[in-house]
Structures are given as structure tokens and as C-alpha cells.
Length: 102
Length: 390
Image (cartoon, rainbow over all chains, first blue to last red; front, top):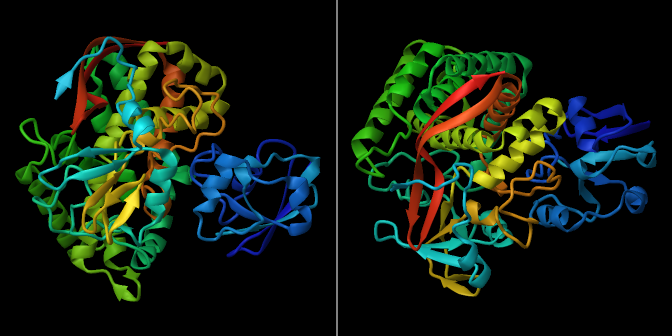
């Protein structure tokens, strides 16, 4: 079980809880503003862009090539960007805070 | 152009040789030639570079075949570049995300159920004209938030709003759509409601109230952009399942894979082959000189089979977990109707999986696009089948 917080642009901080699936699915299921996940999590739409806290980035891990290719062409990309459809919900991310990019 | 392959479920990659050797292809289109960008990374980069590869050219010019000869109204936001484009998307995005809401999905389900029921009760039917077209048209009433009885008019127009049997660009047919939209806008001005016409007429974008011409531009895009693309996606999916019925059964048994399955079908079919841009300066693509004011195309269909990105690109694989296809375009101008299209296809595929035991092909007339040196199967002109219920 992991509890995480999404900092949204329009709806403040949203705390959600889950034990499996992707972080995008968890966010979408809880109506987190700015996480659309249009493609259902196959890394095709880039509508689930988040920033990982710098201190957590190593633990979460960097994007693989296909994901980083998508992010490279996003106007709001930073070195801490990830598409959260590619992050699994697990104990490893318990307690983390993610900032929603859009 | 029409022909028939042995397998209706197969959609060959028309661009492989050219993509792997040159990365770029050429075609003429009404004496306004097009350099076609074929590789996925190049397509995405060009799509993102809207300053050099613009959409806001002469109305109709970025469409292939060009609609310059039959259209003066600028389609919005599709033929508008950033930053002006952003204001239109900000207005339109929430409206076009309504398919994520439960009441919308319930209404959509009713339309899907009725369409499948009718098909199962028929001895045989043409999936293009008697299933996909009515389904697309009825579902469009939800997107426009307008009365269901409007759909019959749109069904009567046929499968493509600009094309007829005689011509890829039928100006008279296009005028039927333009006159219809003008008339609907006038009706909405006289009697405002909560449909898309009225919402747009009351809207402010970039600090200004939308003009009738701008509203018309949005409505033309909504009608034209989601018509043959959605019809192709529906028809091609049924063609695929007709020869892969075990995949339909798998979706019934594992409904949680439906999103992946739909994304993969859309990648494989690429219902829209390509979209153009106009170069604003002399530049280069794949070491090929591109002259200012010449056209390029972003060839989604080719990019979706790029062997550098997709393992076994010519196979339909519902277990493809990472699937960065560009069937809905990429970057600023990604498809406004994608949420509606995805929702329709997800609910349709799940419903077919629960209700249909077999799909027998009786006759298929494939729609082959002739694009310069390339010939690409994009869908069907007609597809006669017999469905059996579970």
C-alpha cells in the first residue's frame, strides 16, 4: 500500500492511496486534475506528466528511451519529469509527493 | 481505387522500403507536391516544430488531398498556430473531454447496444454504411450535445463529407455540409440552447467573442475530422476480429486489457494516413532540402510501423504495454476528438466481445489510397458480413 500526494495546478494537494497498477491509473481514478491518461497508460499521449521531487528521483528512476523521447518534446519538461503511466504503484513510492505539470 | 486482399484483417505497411532507406517519400497532390516524413521520431519532431512547419497556412492546404479548391473557411483550432491556437484549445478541451463523464458513457452505450442488436438481427449487413456510419453519426450527437434525430441527416450524407464516388474532392458535396452548418448556426443564434453551436457562439477566445466564421470553422473540423476516421476505425476493428475471433473472446475474458487493445488496433490501422504542414523557411528533413512555402506531411501510418520503435510492427499485439503511436497526431495539434473516439471504441469492443460469437465476411471492397508511389489500404468502401450472437 502506498500513500502519495499530487500537487495540482487547480485543485491544491490531493492525497491518494493504492497498492497496484500505474501511478497514472491511481491519479485518474481519484480525479487528480491535470492527469488525463488519455491513452490508458501505453505511453502514447503524454497527458500524465509529473515532476518527481529531486530527493526521490533516484528511487523512482529515470525514464526509459521511449518515455524520454516523448518528454523531450514537451514544453514543460525538466530533469525531474516523468510520465506517471510508466511508474508502478508500490511501497517504494509510499510517502512521495508529485507535482502535476499541467 | 479499390481492390481485395485475401485477408480482410491485414493492413500492409505501404511505406517500409522508403522509410528504412530514405526516411522521406514524395507525392504530388494537385500540383502542390508533398515531402512525406516517414519515421516516428522525425514525425514527432516536425509535428512539435510548429514555427517552421505551420498549420496556419491557406485554409485547406495542410490537408492531403488539399481542400484549397473547395474550402475557404479556416478549420479551428486545427489550422491555427500557437499562441492563438492555445486559446481555442483552452475553450474546447473541456467540452471534448465530456466522453469521460458517466452520463455521456451511458448514452453512448445505448447507441452501441442498439447498433449491435440491429446488426445481429440482420441476415447480413454492410459494416461501413449500415453499422459504422450510423454509429459514428449517432455518437456525434452526444459530442455536439444535440438531438439524436439530427443523425439521420448526417447518415444520409454518406461516409465522407468531401468525397463522392466520382471524386476525392467533391465541392458540391462539401457545400452541403457548409450550408448545413451555416443554417444550424443561424438557428442557434435565434434559439440558443446548450449544444456546441450555442456554447461556441457565446464564448470568448483570446479576449474576443467568437465570430460566426470561427464557429463554422470549429464545426467543420468536428464534422469532417471525426467522420471517415471513426468509420475506418470501427470497420477495420470488426474486420480484424472477423479473422481473430479468439482475440475478441480474450477481451471478454480479460476486460482490463481493452485500453491496450484499442490503442494497438488504432496503431495498426492508423485511420488517418497523414496530415500536412507548410514550411515557413528553407530547412531540412532527413538530409532532404525543404523549401519555404512547400508542403510536408506527417505520415502517421508510416511512423506507427517504425521498426526502430515498435517490435514486430506488422503484428497486432494486445500485450504491447508501451505503444507510443501517433494515430491521434502529436504535440499541439493532437486530435481534439481523441477522447470521444477512444471511448467509443473501448465501449464498442467490450460490447462486441460480450455479444458476438462470430463475424463471417461475405464480401469486402477495400479502400486503397493512392499516394504518389505508395498505395495504402486505409479501410473499406464496403464490408458485407454476417454476425452471430453468443
